[in-house]
Length: 145
Image (tube, rainbow, N blue to C red; front, top):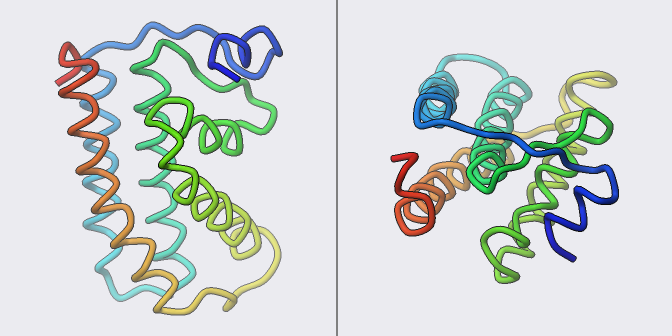
């Protein structure tokens, strides 16, 4: 399936991004990564790192000229990753979707289900993912860098 097919399914809509919009999203990622080092709970560190991860996925989608519809927005944004960066990102997609589910639990249902190790792992993932997204942008959409 392609992003265009997703648009036809009503899962995405067209979006015209700009260098400024992408730069602002990258600044949010930087802020979130900095905020994860504070003396806060593992739940919040995880949630903040998740926010950075979803912003990176959003950057990819925006650069490709789309944005997810509101219904299942985070899910679709994450699931678009292999369509944009290639099927070798399937494991990253599964990991981020598991993080999405875990984040929903700690945000809306129950505290203490995230460990420091979970938070640290996601933070490290986001640091690496940010580098991969930056390289992808340089190679595929230099107009946004």
